[in-house]
Length: 117
Image (cartoon, rainbow, N blue to C red; front, side):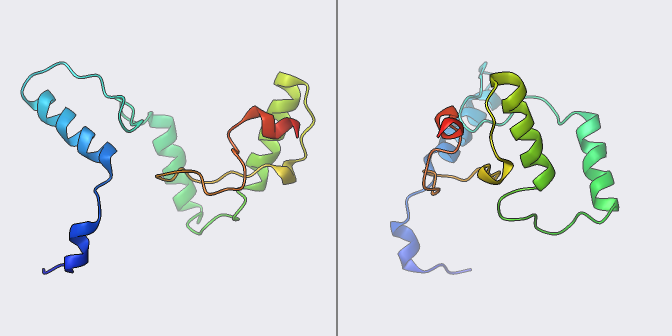
């Protein structure tokens, strides 16, 4: 397949290049501790795999709401109430997937400071 010459100007995602180099060193027998992409060094626990299978079997195969699952957002609000004594309206909580590069949301949503605003 021939790619557009414009692809030559696109820089690679550097973390993946680091992962590739780390795996090459590992293949050479070097002892490597992976800290580059946040991927665990163990298999997904059986209970999580089974829960995923059950969710698929139950028909949970569509996109979730843009703000995240309401039940999860409620659980997060409950966690902050129990752990920190902070009341947070679940409508102010957004659960989104991790993405490469800087956060595109209008605030650092992973920060406890957002919960207090």
